[in-house]
Length: 100
Image (tube, rainbow, N blue to C red; front, side):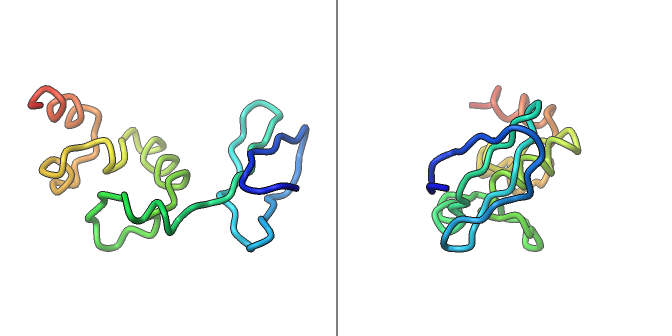
């Protein structure tokens, strides 16, 4: 398996790891699974989340999955002012984008 390229597999397959021991997880899309290297260190440099107890900082795939499951958007979708309210609702996103 080559990294950091995205590889496609048919059917069930357990989560794979890169030679460095890192992986982003798997995204189920039909019967295809997408594996890719997690670039947490690089993502942390751009992550605007200020929530102190967030365990998903820098792990964008987990953050997005978590917030979408709660009908929310992640911090990176909001202005710095709106992000600090911790209101991740779609309504707050619309309000925030209208203010721009």
